[in-house]
Length: 62
Image 1: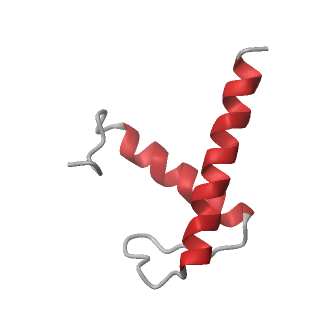
Image 2: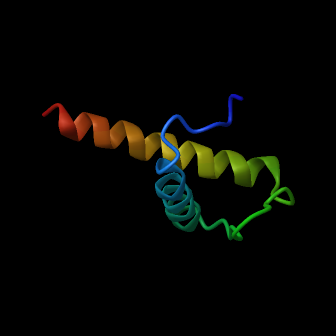
């Protein structure tokens, strides 16, 4: 249940966002299953996503 999107239409946008973040940190994501990533690679992608979300929020409040 924790992995369920509140807005189903947002799923594609989140996947695109994840792919962009992965590309920025040099992690090659595939469409679908990516369970073969190392913890470091997965953490890099998640960290980049959070960094971009914080930057976006900071820019919106200026």
